[in-house]
Image (cartoon, rainbow, N blue to C red):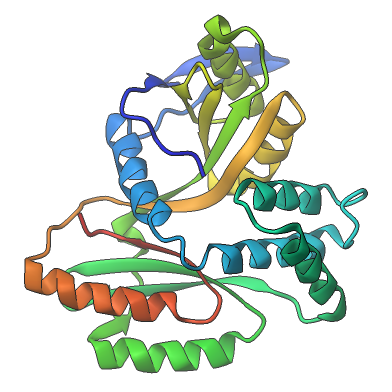
Length: 269
């Protein structure tokens, strides 16, 4: 994943209109606070690398499943995940073994969501990929309750959206803002951020429903996809005392150990 830089050039697409056969409106989002929340979440997630290869292997399996082929020559999704794995320094032998295992595993991975309230005021949304939800949920529910959590809908405490981190393959860095803005409008992004003009790092925000389509469109129009994910940002952040944080960290580790756990979003500062 890209590391967010402190100084960034942000271009809000609020109330921008353009004509492509008919007049369309690009809806602005939450402005500076949204990017700040994304930086908060990305900083947390980028620090959790212990299970990186497990997550990459899961994404490779999903790519084989969704692309209906274990051949990267005909499966663009798989080819993209292999490129990502190599960028993350996953050994080629590990990648090949992962693909080989996928060919012999007919069970279908599916994405599921668990909403949790921990103690009094910590709210969490967890994304899990598994082919055995009943078993995973049974084990996870027992651990969550024993730790002081409860499964309850917390969706109203978060805003969800699609985040696509890219590198623009252009030689004209001076016009990167203009190009990224025009592409965001044309392809249906809701907001765009030039993270680093020199390296061509550009982030796009879109609705979750358009995440897959926009990712594919950007990859076909001069952007190298570094990361694409459905994210959740909290409406409000809370601070925990040192003792509360210690207890929460123990619970977090237990959650990360849940089989198939992909991402954890919370409202903790």
